[in-house]
Image (tube, rainbow, N blue to C red; front, side, top):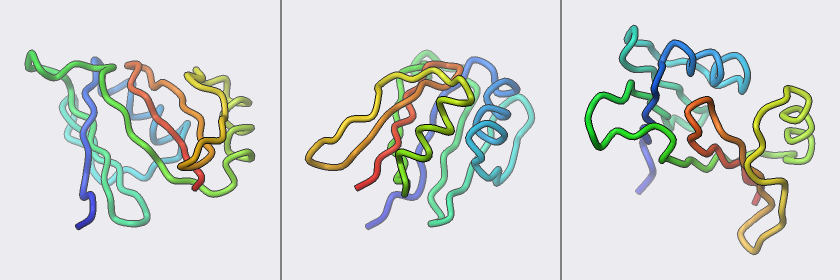
Length: 113
């Protein structure tokens, strides 16, 4: 069994697209204007971001873990871009990791196992 996709909710899709596409370098799969965007990863997994419209669709309440190689190098790049660091790099039993917050305050955690 493999994870197919996950969904975040956003207050502003037009603002969130450049963050993930241009700042983090995620590949856009498709965009449904003002409603939804899908990013696709090299392994085929997807991150969808939907404009929050329903009561349960709360921006800033989600988290995703992204596996990465050379985490120290990537962390340096993130710092240079001036992004909001949520948690500085730390070594844990399950891998070295750090996290940032997107414009909606959803947590994006990068891990090197």
